[in-house]
Length: 519
Image 1 (cartoon, rainbow, N blue to C red):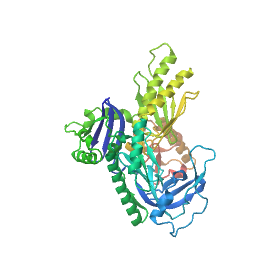
Image 2 (cartoon, one colour):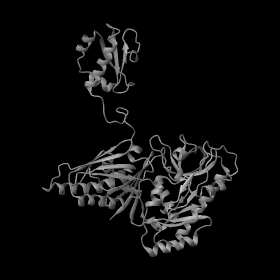
Image 3 (cartoon, helix red, strand yellow):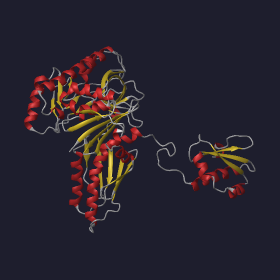
Image 4 (spheres, rainbow, N blue to C red):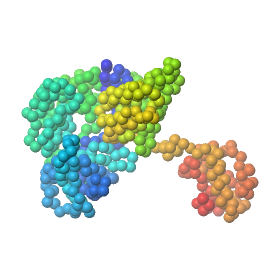
């Protein structure tokens, strides 16, 4: 399998595509006005503590206060507060003095209840963004600060050592754990990342040294600055992709910008010099995404209809509460056995759905309506196929078995806006519904208003103003019958300032807006 990273940079955005044998498997977009925020660390101030919803809101200087759930308040919060020297500061107590507690998640029935430091209104707190704002929700934060590097993650004021679960070899896990024990700084914890597999102790140690320097800088800034302020800005989307996804199995990294090419080479030189030969500057005059046939795959990515190899297709619909995916067989009917046809289409759909969720970065609740399968063993095949495909996903995914109605429920970790939200704006015409009022109903709305108007007045000439789109749809309509019925003469005029599907009624003689008076 040939795995490549293709980076396209323009004046207002950077796009990163990851392909496997030419097929797009991951896609990221980096905007200057919508910078990646996950991993940023802020010195904030507690704005509100609401025990009723088990959460606090932290002022970090954004338009909306950050959301800190009690479950995201780590056991290290007290040490962070002590570091800030804020334990004796003059702060205002919250309205409710209920202690914030967290249950030990070891799974034992008699697990001890661990005390979490009480939060008080006005108190300084160090928090890290874990989820970017989505729609009208603010960022989500945690007080368990961590600093990610290429090979390891530093956990200040912790004492645990963790090894990535994706490193399955027992001897390698033991080797990395011994390395971690030998280099871990005092009063800190360490997590060894997947890319550290087969790396030397010196490589891991150098990475940790850089992380310790970063933490010292954060510590110094947090002590000297007044909240709310940012004390550490994590890498951009492009740099984070290089840090996290440039692994030895990547054949090449193609970049079409000289400036970005130099930046990436400098960064790779710092973190893992032996991968420098994989970085290549794309020099052709044709678009890099066209050359690698990525642009056409992105076009499919943006559509609600996704074709399947055997002629079936998916329909992907976004709603406020969840994403709904419908599986359709289309024209596929190779076998006379309906069950076999349905099984083949559902298996293809399972593979494509896992790919689409990764590509579109869809998170939250996803409900899939598969083609009905009668046999339980076939339903299990679909469930097993989904589980297998989601193992490739870096986000946390939970899948429930298929229900009797042929529905599969999935939850996928949501960290940022999905690709559709990041690249598209709500349609100003339909307001995001995808529907426009039918022409016949537009005429009904006019007639209904005239009926109320005629009840009190009559014989006047009116001007009806509407959006140009509605005006063009109504221009071939003959309104003679309606005008005769209500004894009112009117003309229709275009006004681009009026919302589609709405009308404004004016007296032709005085120019007064009568719309609301007879609504």
